[in-house]
Amino acid sequence: MLPEELSLVTAELIKFLIATGGQCPMQLLKFDRTMYLEGHFLMRDRKGKSGRRMIHVVPLTPLSQGCLDWLDSITKDDPYPFLASMKVIA
Image (spheres, rainbow, N blue to C red):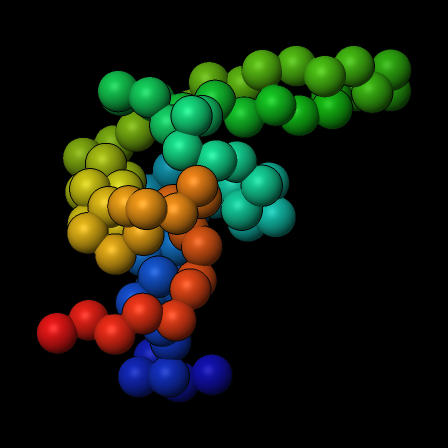
């Protein structure tokens, strides 16, 4: 896929993934807005052999916070910040 074919939301997702140290995209897409807090976001993940659910705190860098702030102008009414709904942006 060429860069000009990416949706704005997908482009911000890729930038966010890089800015947060390469978090797993499938996990990020599962988390709604309540997991994104000021200065960090929370990931619930099954860790280790026991598969016990653990909370992983990921700090937000200025770039990743900027991605979330920009996405608010597009997906603010959606429960998930990276929801790639088809919206026309003027």
